[in-house]
Length: 224
Image (cartoon, rainbow, N blue to C red; front, side, top):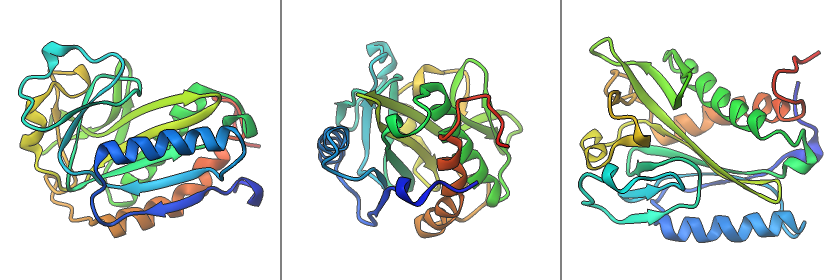
């Protein structure tokens, strides 16, 4: 099922790194404009220079080594790292025009990332009690390959997901990623799969119709 033409968001794709604070300010402004019907919905694909972002549940003890700038993000969750080689998807959608289902939005967002990873031969999954997207690392253990963090204002979504294509994984050592210390972080490159941002973006866009269609029905309701 494809989303109706009237509910197709604008796409913005940046190839040069966008400073996190500038992106956050742009997101906040766009979120307000969407809520007031002054702007179209937006899916924004980009990457950031190295930065640690703190969610609303961040605990200071989990910031182990603030070697990069630390920014209060306003999203849910704890500490997250963003940097080169990691693809970010900011998803600004008006849920009033859809199923008004926050849980359904998060579930669909996770499913979008999982399906796209599958297109590159990576099996990944949700893990009960652990936020994010998980896969089997090269040592056979479970590791996080993608992060999810959202905020919703007046039924308009903000923030979204990140996926590790080929970041410097040592940069995650400055935090306890998402407050989960007993599991590691991996990437497509660590798994031996070379995917650049252009290839990732193209695969993600091919899956966008299914993601948007899932938002038309409450979570748990099967498509007819």
